Length: 75
Image (cartoon, rainbow, N blue to C red; front, side):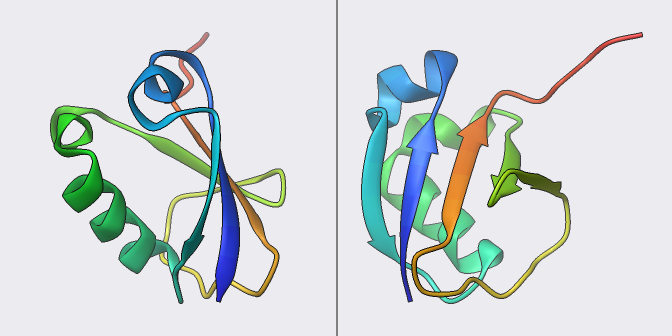
């Protein structure tokens, strides 16, 4: 499935702010990202699919939007 990936912060400096990619699920997207952008391999990342934070592998659908960002912290 073709999905849109948008990136924020320092991650966007590595990947660019927005790009399209073919990925069937979140795990395959993560693998693609590490292969294409090796600098991401040692970073902790947070993922949101269609504005919902996800931590587990999920199936991606055509035209989903995946946000790639630094993990949130807070108190």
